[in-house]
Image 1 (cartoon, rainbow over the protein chains, first blue to last red):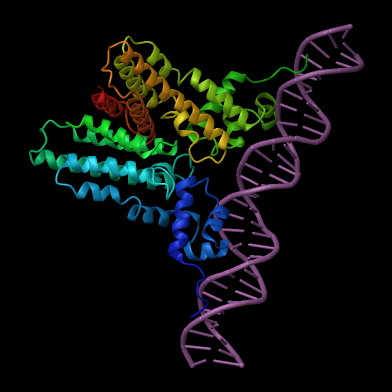
Image 2 (cartoon, rainbow over the protein chains, first blue to last red):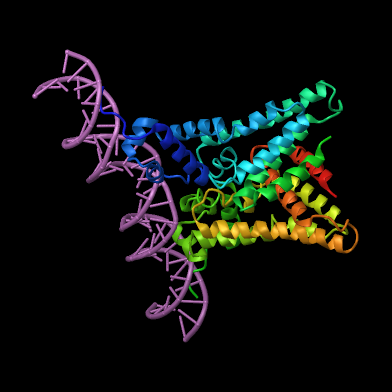
Length: 191
Length: 191
DNA sequence: CCCTTTTTGTAGTGACCGATACAAAATAGC
DNA sequence: GCTATTTTGTATCGGTCACTACAAAAAGGG
């Protein structure tokens, strides 16, 4: 019972996600959000709580859609080498896709915000991504596919850093070809 | 003639620089600046013009002090390989120095700001840094120290991306040892 | 001393921030 | 149709933003 909602909650969330992606958490204003979502402030607050919770939902949606290539790449290849290679080249593709803002939302949206909860939430996702790379490499070490002296944590930090650098390069206007070249060079570090 | 200034302009500028370095351009408020500089708003505006021009002076000062290791490394080694190696390892040291904010101000301070002038100014510095790496590599190619098929632009983009990734990792709490390992791995891509 | 110039602290300016009060409008159950 | 419930648009809240008007205070030149 009651008046039915006049907007599509999922579509509005996707619009909000892209605002946060492009401008970051703090630089995204509620008026900018409502304009992008095509609704008024009371509708936003009734449907999503407040700006902070809307951001939380946007991050979750991002991880399940635009950012899901990462866990798919790490889980869907027979070797760690192939998994990381796919991860880097898919990052090159996604980060420069003109259909949405450049780079990675989890990497950039929390930079230069004062909300410690936002910073920690995104940092947690980045650390989880780094740990996933490390575990995928360790799996191949234990399986005998990589030398036992392989430094999986250092490699994971390295590839995480390369991916974060690719995100920044994409925001600076790098093309997919530029980032594919970065990915290829980074793989020369493979043990 | 006239009342003498009661604060040291250079010291105040360094304090402002660190505020911009830690919080970025937009997230740094004038009240935060005046608190860090130990002065009141009229003194800030009389001495530096406005927030935007103070930021410009802070960036110039950063390039001449904390960020000067970059051009020194590229100019002070006999080979491009040694220059880039020094560049990466000095970045690892500077980005994690607890005496000042982590990471690189030129890389992080402009992220998620709406002022297009600020974004463009910092992007210009980043592009100049990338171009300096490329020219240093090209010099060794022309001198016969590197194979003629060496892709200097791609290598420059790669090392620029690694440095930007190291800056983000430093902001996420990476240690100097972590970043030294990243630097060592990145150098495996050397032709 | 007095006059001019510059800096200082106080106390604000209008604009925008995130978040809401309120009542009209729209739906469901009876 | 009537009531209860939810959403809607308008208009606004107190707080903070970058910035400044103003006058007292502090210096130099005569």
